[in-house]
Image (cartoon, rainbow, N blue to C red; front, side, top):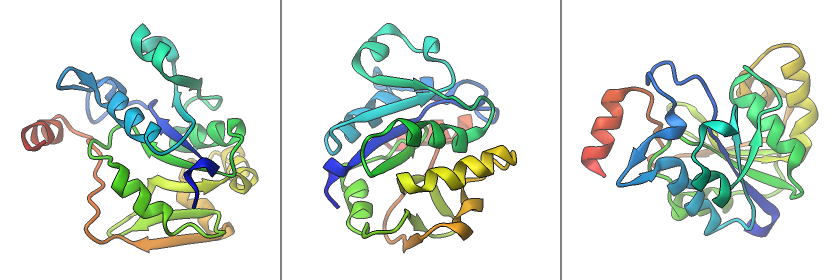
Amino acid sequence: MNPKDVTGVILCGGKSKRMGFDKALIRFKGHYMLEETAITLKKIFPKVLLVTDHKQKFPTQLLVNHVFLEDEFFQKGPLGGLVTALRHIDTSYLFLVACDIPNITVTKIRQLLEYVEDEQVILFSGEKLETLFAVYHRSCLPQFKKQLAMDNKKIRTAFDHLEVKKVKKQNIDITNVNYPEELIYWRQND
């Protein structure tokens, strides 16, 4: 898949209940983890969007350097952010990643893109489906909107109605940070 046909999208909203503070504002080595993710995506994709619940929570530096969209579906979780992004892209696909995955690399993203043919959803699978490190086609939008209208916020629920390619995850470490203890471990091992 040609990365020029893909928009990079970072979800950076959410309640962050388990962390106790907004994960979109996690800082490490003087930078926001979110910004590191955006820089990585910009190495691959010509356009990168950040979808958030509220733009004003970010410092001016981030707002000036990145394109933010405010989530059009308040309190609808990652699915609301995904639908917002799908409504605004002008590419066939988007690559979706959550802001709380600290170990995003160009290599991992390219490995997933290698599997894209003509499916609607392409994602890694292992112990669980990596719905927040995945490629989605614009044609998913009607199904996801229908699901939001039924107040079903789980992205994977729509997979029964879409063409999905599940790629067995081998030596790909994709782990998000949900608890303060995990953040401490990640900072010590980075």
